[in-house]
Image: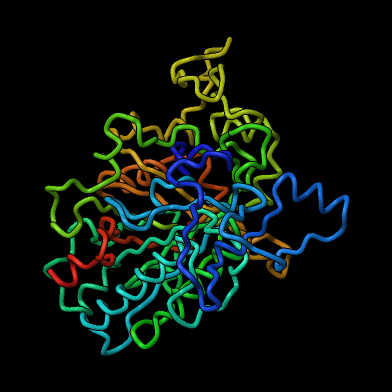
Length: 433
């Protein structure tokens, strides 16, 4: 789990990459969109409810209704230069799902599927119901910063007769010594990432996408994840993973010099349909928490190279202080161990390899011995995985102190095209080019 990881948490008042939910909503089947069913209980409504009994949401929703908090009103844009869900601040709930095209479902059916998916994503991200058969699961909620992101796997191109358009960067990842991969939960022809700040909104989108697949594709695997909810802390701060470590201090930010160069395929890149797109590596990394929790806090800090309390480097300072890789203690021993995870994953220790990490934690219960099946749904974005993920993972393979406490159980690599312009669907330039 590279140190350049989870983006800083945002407050619900001003989520980056989203905008407050507006009005003028398109009517739903009953003539009122679910965005107008948010309720009217602001600060005044809460006081009235406490003093005067029940204030019903169904009594008189109006066009000026506002959500109880700003958490539900955040809205990410579907159309744009890049797909949503890449630089969008991390959401509290996520679903990852891969599909395989069904036998006989070639290029024409794939195009129709991406058209349906794009229309559904656009509607749901705007806080509107799906075009048909909406389940009403998210009827009472705002958009809740919902994002839906689509990608293509290696096998998609052979099944649609588009082998010549398959990017070289989509060649299968090499084997790594820490891999214990389940093929049934790896790869896939199509990949969809769903994120939202409300669990019901996220599930609603997952169900709609699965229903839209129809006769064109079937689910290959599906995984559920979570993060800390925006606003759960007293001030904005980097989140923690299930090992209790502050995780994400050195994640690159869109304002950083060279960010687009490291994360997105340039306009002049090849193939042309991937312009402004990105490549995503998805890994299900199980954390061996029982073993990890047997370590003392100091031993855990030596494994990571950062203080557990505040994420500061062991060489001193605050979380954002530059790590001093050469600093030694009184006995001449390196303060940040040579095999510390935070040292090994630094871009300057990997030829400049830079990843934008946007993962989710997961917990899938306990086995018969009570061992938790929990860890990280590792998701990293880069312009070229051979210059991003691969060199970093090879370096980890050669001696990361964290390796004995994690196990890579599933893996996938997907080409995620640029965003759809108004009137387009995602992947149109590939499927109709």
